Length: 263
Picture: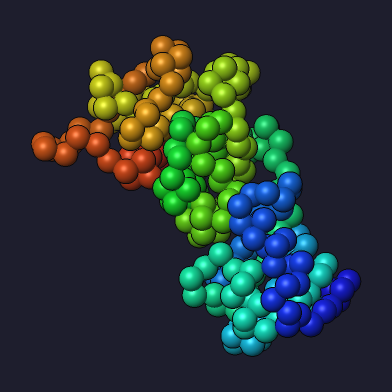
């Protein structure tokens, strides 16, 4: 059973501030998940539920029971309070604060003989970053590194965009270019950068070996020191007049080509 159960009806309850702070990434080691599907994904992934807020709007009684049994603190809220603490325009009656997964560097390789780590370089839009995480999981990437200055993959919009992938894919956030290059050297990963000016097409590069795939934001692109250190700079051939792809789409094209080669 939950360690603590409370009924919450006041719009001034401190729980509202906690959930709002978590949505903004202001609570260290804590992330927010909302909605039936995302909260269910978090439970199925075995994440620790620090606090659950549930209102009468939630009609999934099985999910309510699971939260009552697993959450360290369970808040039985009015719909008004749930709406106040929610980051969604249309809350589904359930929001949880989760303990952020603790990931060691080696987890990004998953013991794979030919790991495939995705590096998000300067992806600032949290929705795009979430989609990138989802794509990485779908294509079988072993882990994801995100660079300092980009969106936080554990903020609410990125969590929602990942549709639960953030709960299962090992992710480390906040590396700079030097740390990423050192990571690749330590683990003997070839560094392949997706670059519109690349000398070879993505189908012309060997993606079967241990690999770090770098994708950058459309505007800023990949840091020059990473371009200089790349083992290969590859492009995705596009028909004119299209000049670029959304970062998650570009990553998907590259990742599924790697999956095809590895099959």
